[in-house]
Image (cartoon, rainbow, N blue to C red; front, side, top):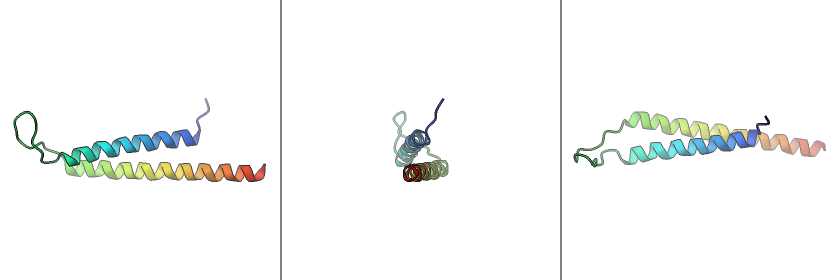
Length: 80
């Protein structure tokens, strides 16, 4: 099974993006009236901020993986 660092990094970027979207959506809904009884929905803002920071770190790590894979490919091309 051949696992490319580029495909792994791209999958990680997609996962980080999904996590970022979910956390941002939860934060945007903070204090909004709920559908069931009109009381505001409770959102744990600290947990959502941690989720945002985690997504940011995942995104950065996967971008660095892509950058490193690109540098390796350029070095290999120069050697050939």
